[in-house]
Image (cartoon, rainbow, N blue to C red; front, top):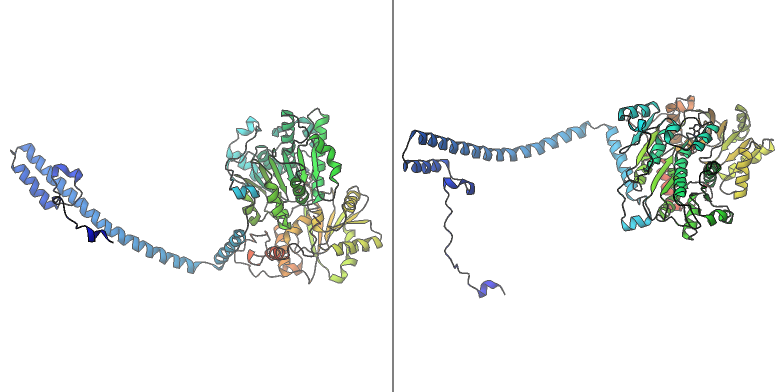
Length: 617
Ligand SMILES: Nc1ncnc2c1ncn2[C@@H]1O[C@H](COP(=O)(O)OP(=O)(O)OP(=O)(O)O)[C@@H](O)[C@H]1O
């Protein structure tokens, strides 16, 4: 029932009189009083008074004032109309200009926009790289961590222009806020003397570019993405800060059973983890001999009996070097926790994610109970991975030495056309190019075995590693090759990624890897720490044209000889401003036809069941 039917609406008091305005009360006057009326009112007012000279002046002033106000009001009204008109015109103008711009857009612009969309779509389905718990609880760290480390005063006093000059000299690009200064001398990094002596003994006299900028960043506690060529000394750039941090913590309060670690380095392969572990143990021992506190490192990789590590576990340990699978397993079984852990480094981070360890990494991150310093390192770091990894980092600094995905300039790259059936025989001839040691790569486990068998038959001392070999077999092979007992190692790419064998003379890619990033990592086993090496790659009809195009551009970038059959491949995107693939970094294609995208999709569907060697981790 409506209230109207019950109650008669009745006016109880007379309506308020129409508001009247006086000139004395202009402040309260919300409505317009025509100037004519105002003038009349003013004259009436003045007429009622005695008119003297001053009053006439007053009158004139008041009249002028009234006129001015009128003018202003008219102007305002006009402006309002004009504004409305202008906005409309503006909108039309914007539309017109956009149409012109659209028409003028080059194919390259349109392509770039298209690529950005593909990249965005790629990332859209991707969960942020952060711990599951952090993601679930929406924990976001906004403040960067700080440490007590400071560069010496004379370095702190350098101007930003001076710092930029140093970076320029070493071809270092940085991104991020408040980037710590580059330090081109180990002595200025406040390293303890035994460590400085150790570096000198290893003929490590001056920091490499990734070290001279990466170490100050890491010592300062900052999150970081470090990108530098294969063999450019990245391992030291993330191992030294962890060692220093461990020493500091042990010095503060000695660790007992059940305590630690303070930091973790995760590597994509067991061999790479062992290599990093060996380096840390060596430096730790050296420090202990020099009277510094004892710091302990746990190796946590698949294929080894963890009982061997029980002695370390029983004393409390400071550092862990691990592969993702075994580390996750240990954490889930509560063999140790990450409550006090503040340092996480992912070596070959992009590889790890590409190899399908993304979920494992996320799980590992969720065992951290506090904010950590997170560092990602690799020779190749496609933008896709950088963008996605940024979510796990706090105000990160990107340190980039050369283009991500570029090959080391210390490698002579030779690409040869060899028919499939002629490969084995030609391999023997190819081995003569240099003295040993030589590494031969193949992506296929069976082919690795076949090559080794053939070489053994021909009297070549060869060992082999791939994901299906037992841990003992792998360790034996690496040791025999490293110590020079064997001249040749035949390997699947994954099993030997990131391994630092000293003085490899020659890398032979028996099969050109489908992805150019794999090629960069594989040839990167030679030409390390400033020495020159040779890489020979066999290609033939079976090599995809796009892969060949990527290779052609990479050779061009590295100023290498381009064989005629590569030179003759035409780039369908030539001249369209193609800046390479934002997904994998390949220069010969765009993201729209990136082989890696296809591979990722295939892997998602197949659940890592492909025949390709994933290293057995
Ligand atoms: N400042 C330096 N001066 C000379 N040699 C160095 C220096 N730093 C490291 N090295 C040596 O260079 C070699 C390669 O280093 P490292 O394995 O760290 O390279 P990397 O950048 O990790 O390569 P990859 O990407 O292939 O894993 C090692 O033998 C190391 O001892």
